[in-house]
Length: 122
Image (cartoon, rainbow, N blue to C red; front, side, top):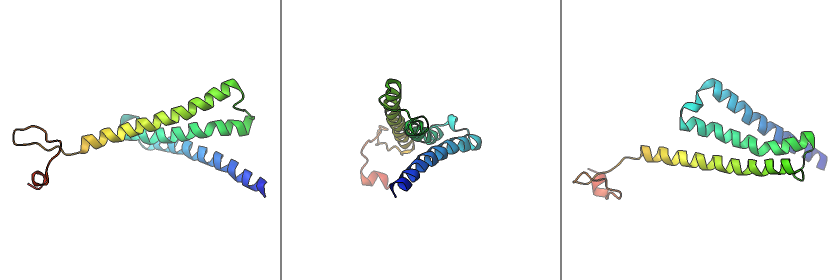
């Protein structure tokens, strides 16, 4: 019974990696994602997913182990790279939200960072 679970787990790794790769190819054909921050963020998420799955897939196919110095460093750097990609995506969302947030100004034309209810209802 445990062998069936292992087979499904391996299939899940291959399936998830393939779907991420397919999404990048599909989105590349559909839209020029490299031209805007949202597109780069969407593709970078799939790329990060692939980075996280690739060490496991390399282990399943070639039997590589983290005991191998090069593979161990690759595995560690892929984890950090995926984290940095998520930070990039967070920064992108923050900047888009800041750009799309309406700004309020007081009577002297200075930006009011904490507008009161009365100034927003006018």
